[in-house]
Length: 217
Ligand code: B16
Ligand code: MG
Image (cartoon, rainbow, N blue to C red; front, side, top):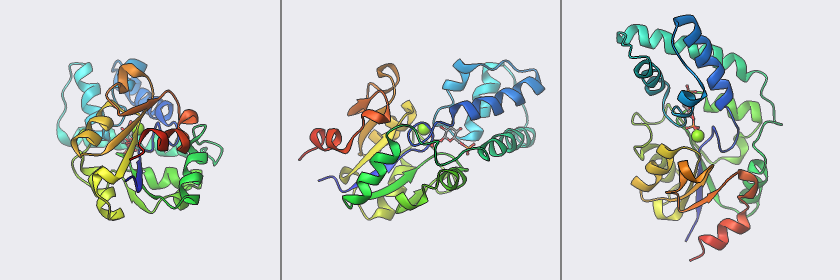
């Protein structure tokens, strides 16, 4: 029986991919690295340090750990500054409606994001009240596709993985949900999320009615 929901943040509740893109692009331009939207799409759902490694690999470059950490911090400062303009109007269409519906129906709800800035994003959206548990990039050390962030959320909700549905926009996020024994809903195209149990192109289609119909016991 489904008792809980665990939501990814970026790409499910709100769309920060373009803000991440602009921050990585600025850093890449400063460093003389090649970076475009295709590379940015590979960063979906993966941690900040894994992201900078993907960009370096794309540029056949390597740097020492200290320099890498400094550059990742520089990118993060640009990204965090851009969050100041985010408002409660910036939910992805349908996300706020689903979260509200889950609250009304008494489901347990956790956040399971790779982002270390998740609390800031939730504050900007005024969304913290929708979540019983917040799991973010500071909660676990192994990031997606490892299942740790979702296992953390389920444990804090006092639920078993098979009692929870994970919502994800990233291929690595659905991999993580499956590795942990969770049900999964993918938000995005089939080419990326064809392995999710259930998939919608956008959150606007992900109504509680549709979800309950699919996951009924
Ligand atoms: P930060 P999610 C992920 O969030 C993003 O999709 C990914 O692009 C980003 O690199 C990662 O958070 C880390 O973010 O630099 O803010 O710690 O999709 O797991 O909610
Ligand atoms: Mg995401």
